[in-house]
Amino acid sequence: MKKPSDDTGKIARSAGTVSIAVMCSRVLGLVREQVFAGLFGAGTAYDSFVVAFRIPNLLRDLFGEGALSAAFVAVFSDYDTNKGKEETWRLAGNVLVFIGILLSIITLVGIVFAEPIVRLLAPDFALIPNKVALTRNLTVIMFPFLIFISLSAVVMGILNAKGRFFMPSMASAFFNLGSIVGGVSLALVLPLFGQPAIVGMAFGALIGGLLQFVCQIPALKGTGFVFMPGLNLRDPGLRRVLKLMAPAIIGLSATQINIFVNTNFAASCVEGSVSWLNYAFRLVQFPIGVFGVAVSIATIPVIARYAAQKDMARLKETYVSSLTIAFSLTIPATVGLIFLAEPIVGIIFEHGAFSSYDTSMTAQALCFYAIGLFAYSSVKVMVPVFYVLNNTRYPVIGSFLAVGANIVIILLTIDLYQHRAIAFATSCAMILNFIFLSIVLYRKLSGYSISYLASGFFKVVSASILMGGWLYWIRIQLKGFMEQNLACGIAALFACVFTGVALYAAALYFLRLREFSFIMEKVRERISGN
Image (cartoon, rainbow, N blue to C red):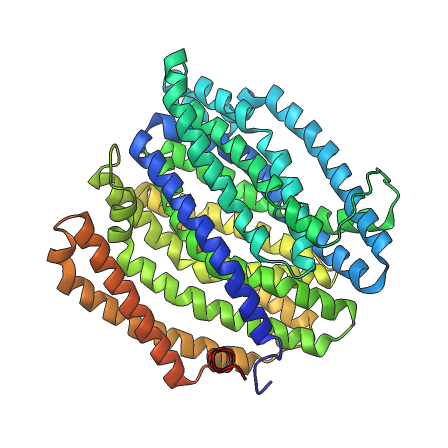
């Protein structure tokens, strides 16, 4: 492989569209977290909300935006390429009805057994009066969120397969908007009726989930979608989706075991540990969404189309170029988060009930989470390739290897490093998963250009090290200015980020990273009108 895939420009353009939309969503997500930090700080109320929201969120990852979305896109793309419109829309209708019914049943069961689930997930909450009861009430309120978000994932899959990326990626911005406006409004009103303010934020999450689904409906109609309601459990398309989902759910369940383990360990650490880890993970999710998920969403339909056409040569080229793009975006993001963790956390969260001590503890967790950023994002690109190859057992194995590594590392380090050990173990587990899947996928694809990928990786790391040295120096120079007030802190942080990105881009251009040069060439052509 001597040049980037011919689809690099298309993927980069689609990923850019997704990135803009995801960035809007992530910015609103950070505003949402700022609201939580200002109103509730890092104590009992927010700890309870985090655990309560995590319960339907665990299932969302299993049945919604994780296994279901990837499996559905693979089958839907095949139908859209090789079968008629009627069969394609009938498949979509059948999947929507099936998922709606299944998750409604799961939601009812979850509401009934909310308290035992809370006690299982965070047993140490029982040591604090009323914390289990509060978490249980929040869980009951937010459980129906699972239905809305899973139906939204199916709609997102249809739109992505049809080449519509912006609106599905903007959908989570509507979730955050509903959570902020609806949640804050209710948080201010409900205490007048004897309810804790955090209950209002729980209802806000439910409102946001509904908005995330509804906002995509106009774009769905624009694709020519015809809803054909029906439930045919013998439909071969539905069975293919479920067959692909089954091992993926098992694999994702391993990820949820990790989250369960981490929550359990965090709840046993000092008060506030659950909150510090959650705030830090929210921050690291920003580059994961803007870069890793964006590249993954843009790549999946292209790879699925090549798989349907049995064009393995172009599939491999597209995969290698996509992974190189993911490296070029996430590795410098890791360096930036590590060197700028404390000012980022302080500027975003250190207001109201969120103290300077909370800032320090959250920043430390962020540094350790950032170590695994490139692996987390790369796995987002890799796993869909297994789906289109109809070979999903290896992501399952990788996920369980990650679980084992996560538990071992936490047990070895938690006494000394407390909540930081959990963030570090999460990153190590993801890196192990990435290495395992890379080896397996290389064999399953009968090889791809390792030398091309390694060359790109070396150039990205070199440019990132140069950027890291610059950030270290400029932060020291601006330290006094940064600490004067909030406006000065924002200006100094912006200066660090802007100059760091500019230096990194210049270094990539000098090192001639082919994907970067190719994308720049396409940008120049578009600007000049050629």
